[in-house]
Length: 67
Image (cartoon, rainbow, N blue to C red; front, top):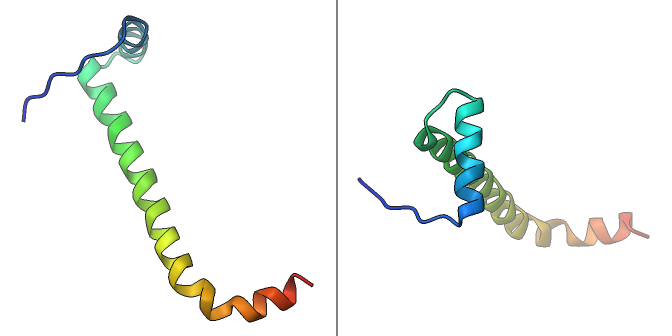
């Protein structure tokens, strides 16, 4: 799928510089950053789901440990 990305001038310059320094295309730099962002947030979301499900189960024990 084709997509248009509008960046502020300073971000566009930074992206061009990063791509040039890494000898990669700007598209490749953006795709890598996007994939890393998604992976990080998927992990964080999964951890939150597990914590929400399991914390109530251990709430009493955790409360005792905190005293």
